[in-house]
Amino acid sequence: MASPAILNVMTQQIDAEREQVLATAAAEADRVRESARERAAARRESALAAAKTELSQLAQRSRERAEAEAEMVALTTKDTVTDELLAQVKDALKQHVRSDQFPATLDALLAELMAGAPSNGVVLVPPAHEAHCRAWLDNNGHGGMTVRASAEVADGVAVEDEAHTFRVTNTLTTRFTRLEGGLRKHCIQELFGQGA
Image (tube, rainbow, N blue to C red; front, side, top):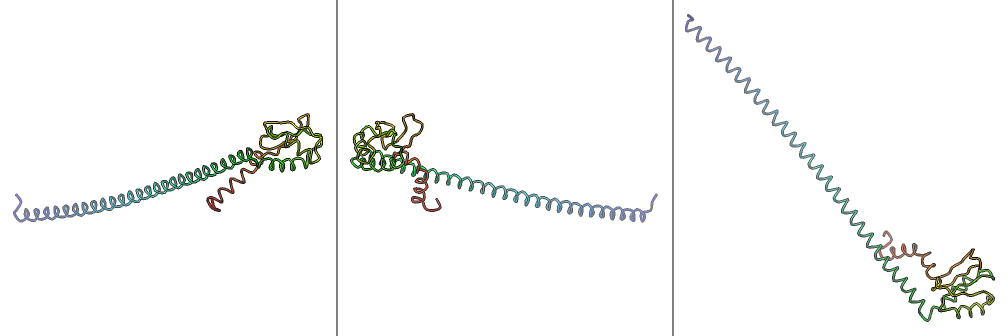
């Protein structure tokens, strides 16, 4: 049987080894715990950064969408206002055609038209102003031209040949239509400023 001294030495050695194993295990547990904390903190920071980036991108997309919608509303408003203004101009032209001042306008349209018209053409005139146009043509050296009333030229005049191979029209409607794009731009600039 072992002596109590050997037993004490062995117990002390086992106790020392046990303390060493416990200390190593505690140190390893501390290292694992610290490593887990660092990884968790890094993951948390990464998740926060990703969330912040995503929120920033969502906010940017929302701003861009809101700006695009605001721009669309502004453009639609500009177009609507301009359309309404141009419609008022068209209405004013129609009222002018029904007014007592229209024969003077008709004289100017006839003068422009006849400046380059062939002498054997057919002059198309508004039915309500046929006599007036015939008198103007007679008084301005175009008395030999054929005059026909035509509802197609209710707000102006036209000249064509008998065979209908050409036609030159000079009406308020055709003039307005030809200038409408430029008028639209002018309205937008005048109403909404140069950068509109």
